[in-house]
Structures are given as C-alpha cells and as structure tokens.
Length: 300
Image (cartoon, rainbow, N blue to C red; front, side, top):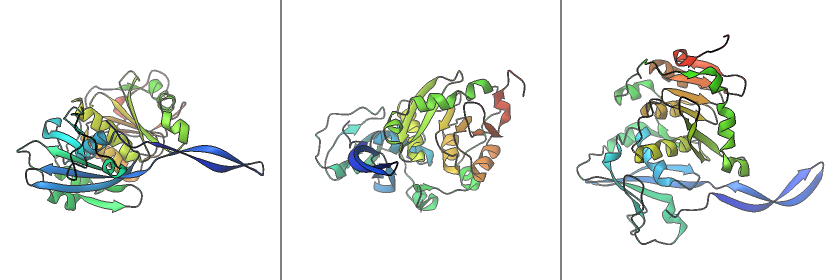
C-alpha cells in the first residue's frame, strides 16, 4: 500500500554551549486524515484526525470501532483512499490491496473511505450526537460514562486473568526498544500490546496518542483478532478517558501508561472493571483500579 512518508528531514540550527551549528534533523510528519464511511445510503464524512501517515486503513477501522460505529470486521467490505474522486488502491476486510490503479497527488492519501458491506446499516446521526472537536486530539467521543452505557458497553468480567507485578516493571524498556520512529524524531507516541508473559506482540507509533492506539486496534480488527481479553495494552503517554474508552471497546482488561491517568479515566476503569496502571517504570508503577488482576510474588 502506497502512502506519504512518515519522516521529514531538514536543516536546523542546533545551539550547544553558546555555539550554533547547522545540522540535519528529522521530524515526524503530521498530516490530516479525513475518514468517511460509504454505506447503502451514501458517503458520510465522519472525522478529520491529525496523524502520522502510514497504517491509515488500520487507523480508520480502529477509530470507527472505538467510537462504536463499527462492531466486527465482517461489516467492512473494503477500504480505499479518496475513492469518491477517482478509483484507487482498495483493501478488503483483511487489509489486502486489490491492485487498483494508483492516482497521483499527496491529497488522495489524506482521505480514507471505509466501505460497508451491502445491507450493513450506518447510523449517520450518531456522528453528530457523539463527536466534538478539541485542540489537542481532533475528533473524539463525548467524555461521559453514560454515553458508553448507552452504547451497550458492559463491565468486563472479574475473571482469573492476572499478570505478575515483576513483569509489569519490564514493559517500559520493551516499549522503548521498539519505538523506532521515536528514536529518530523524539516526537511520536506509541501503543503496544503484550501477552500475559510480557511478550510484546505489536507496537504502533503516531504523532497522536489516540491514533497510535486506533492503529493497533484497527490492525487487530482487520486481522480478526479481537477482542484482546487476555492481553495488556500500554501507551507511552498519559491515560485519558478516550484511551480507556478504546481499550474498553476492545475488551482489554489491563491498561498501563507511562504517564498519569486522568480522573475520568480512573472512573471509567472502576465502573467497567478495567485494571489501570500509571507511571509504569523499571522499578515501580501505580495501581488506580482493578488491583485483583495484579499478582505479587514478593513482598508488597
């Protein structure tokens, strides 16, 4: 799948010890992505998200899933760039290209249309009811626990799934070791998926925290690997309500964050039986909700 570059190189003045030196630098690319949904009754603009180009089909699928606009991979008939201007590369529900003719111009890579299968209903009014715009993250779901309950979200089961505390303190190093774009730019967030043994299964980077997680969840959706009910999600920044909402939709029982959680993120975790960890470091972490999923082998 062709897309725009995700890195941009330029020369800057770097000042060290009072001396300015002209050196080459690397920036993470930030571009808008418009997500549209095509159903039996037409094409519906859904959202414009600032993101790092790459994995745009996964991002679109993950965003729609996280906002409750999609529920299963079977609803997706295909995903295309800028399909209502000209034919272009399409993906089926598994994300595979169909080899359609390419259309030149960078703008076509900033519009993605998700085509629903015939007969799949799309509630266009849901968009106006459940989205608003902020300066920090583009278009997000309304920050209310009531909206999740109305959407049909139920608390996760209090099952026997647990993760060792000694393993959790190793996650930060594993996350950083795989952040290749962050190592080059210092300007991207990451979302990672770990199994119960602490093995890193997937990692996605993006200039936006929410977009990195959407890419991860969208990839699992298109690969028919949801829910992720026996896994741990980790994010490189803070844990916000939107991050926890997306985790809940994917049935992720444990969310770990390098940074702090917000108060509403903690309330969501407590209400829906998620385990929420913050300030995860090589020696420590905080438990804000769902302590029963953490196992201790040593002294507490």
